[in-house]
Image 1 (tube, rainbow, N blue to C red):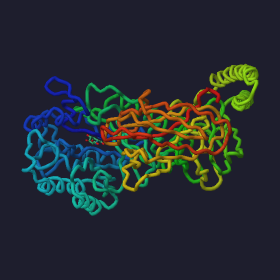
Image 2 (image 1 turned 180 degrees about the horizontal axis):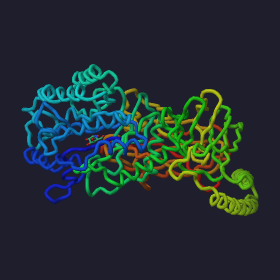
Image 3 (image 1 turned 90 degrees about the horizontal axis):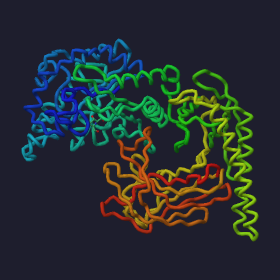
Amino acid sequence: MFIHWGLYSIPAGEWKGKPVDGIGEWVMNHAKIPVAEYEQLAKQFDPVKFNADEWVSIAKNAGMKYIVITAKHHDGFAMYGSKVTPYNVVDATPFHRDPMKELEAACQKAGLKLAFYYSQSQDWHEPDAIGNDWDFPDESKKDFSRYFEQKAKPQVKELLTNYGPLASIWFDTPRSISKAQSEELLTMVHQYQPTALVSGRVGNNAGDYETVGDNQVAVGPMKRDWEAISTTNDTWGYKKNDNNWKPASVLIRQMAHAAGHNGNYLLNVGPTAEGVIPPPAVEALNEMGQWMKVNSEAIYGTSGGPFNYDLSWGVITAKPGKLYLHVFDWPQGELLLYGLKNKVKKAYLLADGKNLPFEQSISKTPENYSLSVLVGDPVLVRKLHSLQKSIIVESNRRVRLLSEQNKEKQSAEINKKIDESVKQYQEVREKIRSSSTAPDKNDSVVVLDIAGVPEVDPSLIQQPSGAVDLDAYLGNIHKADSDSSLRFDSRGVAEHWTNKEDWLDWSFKLPQPGVFDVVLITSGQKNNHNWEGGHKIGIEVAGQKLAGTVNSDGEENDPVKPYWNYWNYVTSKIGQVTIPKAGEYQLSLKPESIVSDKKLGLTLVEVKLVPAHEIN
Ligand code: FHN
């Protein structure tokens, strides 16, 4: 559990009766509150309802294993008893207690680990630190080293020597801290607390693990141990008017998504000035806890799933001999997984241990390993299969006929047949749908006992849903010259694509042919909210060429995998292609022109082939 708690929970997103935009703990900065005024808040800080055992038990019941709490946030106020400055919770408030000491004891009792957040570079209380340009506008007078030596380092040492054992020091917003200073902090943590880790945000690539962006749960390929951090509403520090609470289903799926990509999940709460964790957050955490009581085996001690691309129905976590399929979108009748080569010995629902019938098959052209786990009525599922097959056969006939004479009459007959089969198909599917509800509305875990270590087909394969997702980072980059700025960011998104001579291509397997809409998903850059469109691009796939413009046809955002806070993806439909035969294909994306008036250019998340018909 991440906890943002400090003086900012008193104004709670308002200053002098007016709402202040942005996240709650930034109120001092956003409202440009002078130090002398903000300091007065300390006199009011008296969290009479604070109970460390209660907080720790909320975290423990949710299944959490560690707590990271703000010992000092950017406002500079120490939430622990510091001897370095009287601007701390013990000396400056009527509370006079050290909540960190109480949390330390409560964590030890409950068997949870404790870690401290420490803002090493921004300190709006200090003239020499980074961030306060309203009280201390004259940059030339600032001496960051003086602040670093006189406040940051001694306070970090206090935290490391007066509390513990600590799990981590969670540094944040390094800004312009030097490499030597980041390394000094790292060494200090390791010296005083050899088992404590240092967050990547200590700066200059010095940390022990990587923390991806705030609320950035979607990630590309991660090279190091990493942690996703998420808010329960839209703020970190308490904000009384922020009621945009994420439902437990989103939080549970985010946690599974992080685990499925080999990461930890750190979920934040912002307690009130009285010391109360907001009830809607507690409710969501309770629901997570209930899910964990049944399914924690699929999270604790797991590693990420064996595929390097995302699956259409959910995500996979793994342990030796086991794959845990976290099914977010419960399928109609059968759960399909392509590309798994291992022999499956057993499939069962984690919640009740009930065996599920399954079948493994390998098809040729393209070679495709397919696993079907039956989760619905077998008779109906068989019927659905045969209808599906006949629709596909007839659709392929229709495609082949396009070049023949007499095609109109024959097409009409085929169309009629297809229409009838589609109607029957829909009826059967509706029956299955109404009889197969998800065992768990948040995340139903199907366990596969497998022989050997997971071995998967490394090729990118169409998803059983029929969609082909060509994530940018799975493509091959072709650069016109080695200086081109095009690159993949840490999310796996292709950005700084300003040279129109650069292009990408992908290879993929397509077991289910058909008609597909070609859709481009683009975004803003990692650290730039803006979006730039108007680029003209050419797509070539299966011998067909499409030309189109990257315009915004719509926006989408998966709340489980927001790519960067709440910024949306932009969708652009480029055209339609017909791929009549199953097989292996290439798709290339070559720009004809790239707009870069905003100096962003093309920022590509993925190219999607979306089945144009319900049954392709
Ligand atoms: O500026 C802070 C913010 O207030 C909050 O603490 C988050 C949590 O990750 N970190 C910084 C922004 O990334």
